Structures are given as structure tokens and as C-alpha cells.
Image 1: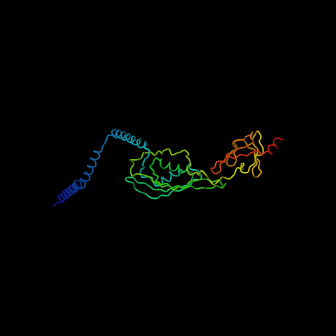
Image 2 (image 1 turned 90 degrees about the vertical axis):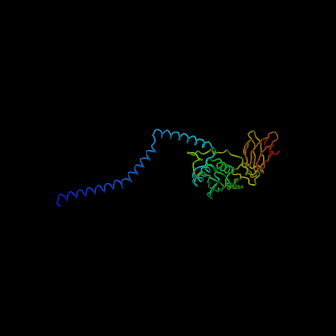
Image 3 (image 1 turned 60 degrees about the vertical axis):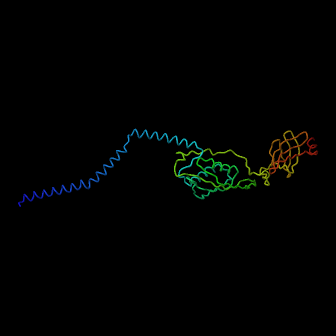
Length: 297
């Protein structure tokens, strides 16, 4: 076999090898890739939408969402989605900013529980303060936009005396609160807007009508007990207390535990209204004849 024939056969063999390898690559390896690409292309074609149609659908869905959000916003209460247990601490801090300086509150997380399709956190709030502080706390919890329920309340009266000896009648309390939340957003609005939680002062039902504690005379006012009417003049009345201190008073002026209500020049009498621990008394001081004669001279 000559050299030319050998070369020809070698080229033919190489060509056959290339055809076999190329066919295997195209029909075995590349076929699977082409099929996957064709399926992906078909999926993209099936999900292809017109941009204008998408915008129109988006506007319609946005309008429906706004209507639903408005309906939820009109409801007195909402149930938030996936509420953090820390949020109630922030709520209580905001409410307690309006409490009196004598108020003290402490909050304790108790448990996480389930109520049908909802969940809730349970807290215990303990402390003391004015009766209006407690009323404000209960009102804010019950009227809050995000649903909260008071499970129990216990109260007791306390008497605290400040550095001047003035009694302050407070209320001690323990409140158990449940704070509700949900796993979805069907019961809450897109933006949280709190209800109006401010209240007007109310009558303190814990304030005793009759009190053993009487505030001290820190302003050095006239103490009518043991006082003596010295003289009556057109501008008012000269009165001396049991310690010998002299005061010039007129109608309406404040005295210890009360006020001077009337000066009767015709009968030489000065009248007072005093509040002695809830007991209202009327006291009169009469000008003695000796004092009258001295004043007339």
C-alpha cells in the first residue's frame, strides 16, 4: 500500500471519528440542554404579559387594597401581625409619661398563649400612684387601637407622706393584661394609627372622706385653734394665735385648714370655715368687751 492511499484512509478514518463524536455531542449531550432550554422558553412565553395590562391590574388591586385598609382603619380595634413582646413595654412607657411624679409602675412578662386562631402575650403590671393614674392606665389599655384586654385588677389604698409631712393618698394596683396578635395581616392596617388615649380627671373614689392625717402648717398661716380676736378695723381684723403671733386678715383670706369667711362689724364676730380631715367646721371668734373698749378709746 502506497503512501498516498495510507493518507487517504487516515483522513477518512479521522472524518468518521469526527462525525461520530459530533453526532454523539449533538444528539446525546446537547439534546438534553436544548430540550431544557425549549421548556424554559415555553414557560416564559406562557407567563408573558403585556406591560400595560400589568400596570392596569396593579392599579385595580391597589384600589381594592386601599378600600380594605380603610375598612380596617375604621374599626375600633385591630389585631397586629407577628407582634413583638417588647412593643407593650414601649406602649406602657408612652402612657406613663403623663402620670404624676408619685406614680411607680413595674411590668412583668408572664406567658405566650393561644386563643382560637389568635395568639396573645400575658403581662402583669404592678405599682402605685394617684387614682387618676390608674384610671388613665386602664383606659389606655382598653381603648388602644391594637387589641388589649385586662384580665384582672386588684387595688388597695396607700398613704404616703412627703418630706413636709403632707399626706398623699395613693392607690396600689396589680393589673393582668393580654395583648393579642395574629400570624397574618387580615386584621390590621398597613399603617398603625393609635386611638385618642387622653382622659379627663375623674373623682377619686379611694380618697377618704374623713382623714386622720392633717397637713402641717408649712406656710405659717393663722391657726384658729386657740386664737383670739384683738380688734376690728375697716380694713379687716387683728387676730393673735396661741403663740402670740399677730395677723391682719380680711374676708376670703386663707388660714390654716380653711378661710376667713365673714367679718361682722355690728356684732364684733369673725367667722371661719375649717376642713379638719374631711370634717367641715364653722368657728367664730368674738371680740371681748375689754378689746372693744380699748379700740374705742
